[in-house]
Length: 586
Ligand code: ARG
Image 1 (cartoon, protein in one colour):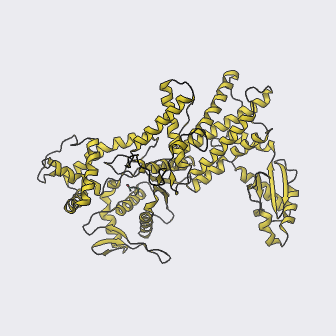
Image 2: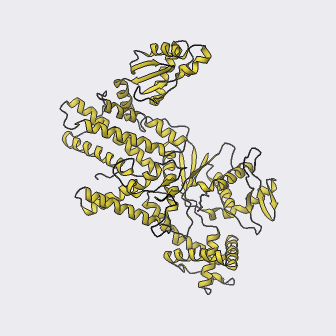
Image 3: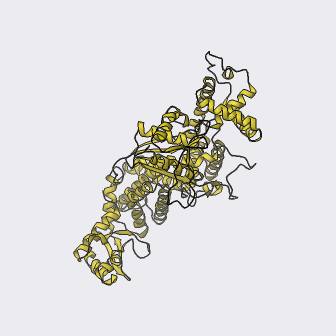
């Protein structure tokens, strides 16, 4: 069904037409002077040129046609040519009652697309740390929004499992345990089933190797060679690689599950290893790739570039694949197996050059179709209160698990301080609220911007925070539950608003479809955060001025309860799109 703005626009367009002007001037928008009106139409100003008429004259003529329309309570032409509009209580209530009946609150779905959201991107063998938080949180929300819009959506974790870090681990293992069969090139037997390391050993091995490679040139060379041999199929190295994957992936899955983040595909850079040679050959054969200092490259600079865009490297001079290579082969693989209409990458914005090169190269070489969307949503850095990238108190990289545990503890303390609660239930609630605190704290910022992770602020029950949103939802649930206990069922019909605050809440609810659509089109979950913050503020203002359950006029009370029920459903839908949920009590 049409959004509230579209419905208002149709009425305004009719009026323009009746007054002798083109319908196209009837486009309405939300008022930027909410103290004066709820919606406005600026078409008279736009039309003044075409009709050689003062905009206010046109506005007056159109306003006259609009006056008396049952959808509106007030219409006014205001200098220099605005048409100010406020909705009638009946129209607004009618609109809400009809969206309440609809599956997605009247949201119209576009032609469904096939979309892959590439997010997460952790490197195996390293524990998840706070640097992985944003990709997970934003990507999960983007995936859910795309799915809600009716698309077929795949979330792909795209593991970093094929680069130098693998060669480093192999090299370090060889140093420590040279007698293991993996390093004996003449070994033809089967390799041990159990890995020669535990997860925590692996987590120590990798940074040790990485540190050493920065100081020891020969060691680094050995790691590069090991990477190459792994990629070219050396049996023993592939076996170590498999061990690393077997040890890492369950841990990654557990960590992501703690964040309510779930991937459909657990593919990685390694998954496309087999198609790299033929991809590189095709690029050469078709004249897109050429040799440069021994390496195979594709030029991706364009005439209109204002800065230098270096060529996209496909193969190093030793034939090894690079980060660009695996990303290109991944695109090729996705086109061959799933043929998506769009791929959305949620990755640190410092990788923008990488993706610019990859996207251009994919288009140039015909790996994607002309109309395949390639979108890079580059996110900013999560900083600490000092404005520098978030660190532990000791200045180290904080593990994701540690951060989550700290926020859970903080929430648990707050919940226990607030009221007496059963310890076990409080812990469960704290877990739910902590997730909302973390996710909302992140998502309420525009993804591309850096933001400060402020534990005190994010865990507060007041202000623009996850806990505040959940607190409001729990408040509504509690009223609805009490009503249910007394009356047995939740009434269905919302009535015309009797107060300013009630109408404000209704107006906010009416904007749901427009908000979701723009969050989807702009790939912008923060729009949903801003929206639910408004809805919650409106709800709380209404709640504070209204004695809902004590109301004696039952018709009035029923209307309010129906309004609360719709508010709760809309909020629950929105937080699900953001990737968290609400507890029953708080
Ligand atoms: N593993 C990469 C890193 O740690 C991120 C992967 C992002 N996704 C992609 N398709 N390149 O930087």
